[in-house]
Length: 313
Image (cartoon, rainbow, N blue to C red; front, side, top):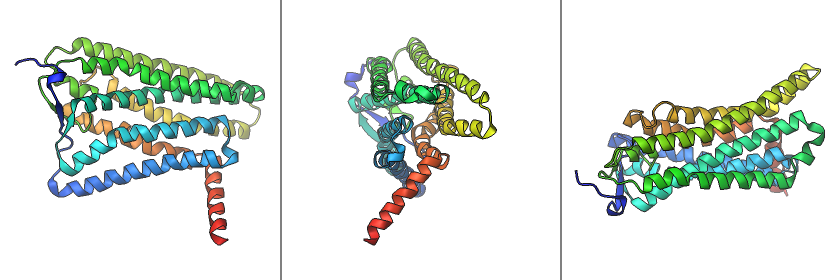
């Protein structure tokens, strides 16, 4: 087969999902509903944190940044998902394909570091309560957030640049968006070296951050167990439960994707796994923080009270 690099591949064909034509409208409406609910849920969190003075704390500052990130994360792949469900196989310019791949992984790495910053926030709040607001100052919060975004968009250059310089002989991507493993299957060359580099790089990022989070929560558990009353211990653990759940969802899906040999999943399973970490997890995050957090539920209730009071004027 004659080799050709990506500059002579003007577009890729996204295969999407093999869905009967009669079921496409239903699948499209279902996915569109999930996308809209995800946008609304994360926008609600951002609005609450900004409008309610009871949520003007470091923890909710990080939560609003996470919600802002999720808006972009889900919007990176949702348009191509909806288009594939409605029209089946669709084409995508190669430049747009690599931009999508880069943006998706940049936001994913950013979320990885942001979850670590949120774990540090919980550690300082529980283990050093008297000095918490001094240690977690507004300046430090901004530094942590900026560092997370910078690290994410810098780190994603490694896998994206390796993919963009790879020669491709085929154009049909067995996926609904441009991701690493499906694109590698189209290459004209042996990609074993590329797989090792990308797998090692992403595993190192996720692994280091995960073990830092585990270490911080080890300190939190030790501090909580030293509290004198069961009520105090339950209250301390409740402030961490939502974050722990989100961490489990994020790193659990990352482990499924990058465990074992990178790209070793059966082709048709890639896109279904991607639905979990690309669409379902961003939907669950605001639900988890809303249903499991008393302060957020109280802020929602205050917002509705102000709304109905305004309506009554």
